Image (cartoon, rainbow, N blue to C red; front, top):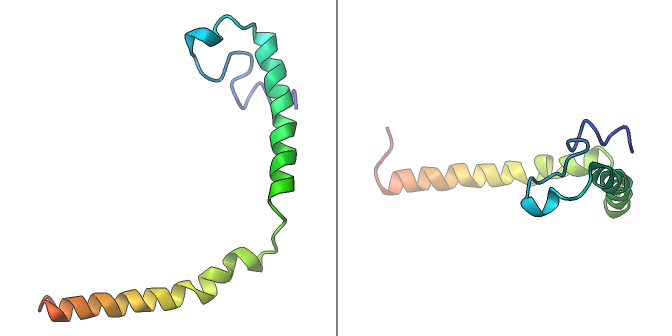
Length: 86
């Protein structure tokens, strides 16, 4: 985690440049960021299950094509109703 801290969230300085944060030494901020990285990583891995490739793409194959077709029919109906067809 200490290798990820310098390049990603800015290294030693605080993430937000607020006056109340300026008094805290850089080593404290570095330690907070080093502890925060594994915590967030473990939290995300535990909170979100591992998906197969077909699971996130299922709506793109089963849900969105009928919705798109319904929208085309709806827009066509609106254009016919208001006599706006080219």
